[in-house]
Image 1 (tube, helix red, strand yellow):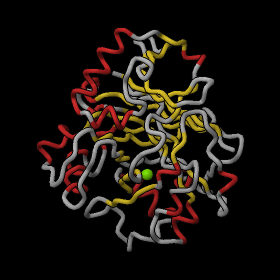
Image 2: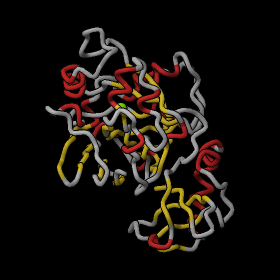
Image 3: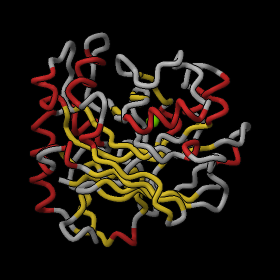
Image 4: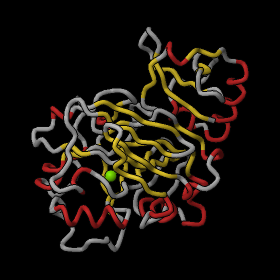
Length: 294
Ligand code: MG
């Protein structure tokens, strides 16, 4: 299923699923489903089965009549992220001089894990507020994000996919000068509006092999990033194993897997985002996340 969170004119958040043609939303909240996707995931397989049953009976709303939000507009915990997880990006980051944490090591020995504040999340078409970055160095990072559907601790690589309920798209927007200044990445990546997400949460059963997914990012119609998820340095099972070896994962946790080469600081001089720009991230089989820059 392809879930969305949306609001109508009343401003209340609702959960729905996209019809096959993508032109309409089946409103599951009005049919009796919980009002947010995390609550659905917390019910495990029962929640998803109930959603599927309700979808059959729900009335379709034309997509023009609603506003799509991030599928998880208010995550319970910080977005967990993996840094420097594609070879070519890791090299461009080191070369850019903006990486103050590498200690001269271009390719990390172990996954680089950091988080983004929940308050950084915005939905599709909402502006990325580059003008609120005091360091004037706002950059984009198109990424595949995993959504955890089952609580787990010390999850082995072989069972990692049992804990993933589905996938969405994240733009790990970053204030590069702040990332460099503060050594740790939390502040530079957590400004309000610096985590565009969605619009669709696709359940794992719709994606047979996530390594086949292609991540592409355009800025103003210029293709900047293009890579396959199979190019990850630390693959999805390793990421799940690493994080859960120390921290329990819970339903609704979101893990952004890293960004490919082609970010703004990969260029000389850097191509930072400016008000008026438009960033479009497409991941095959998932969809398109587009945000203007303000
Ligand atoms: Mg990133």
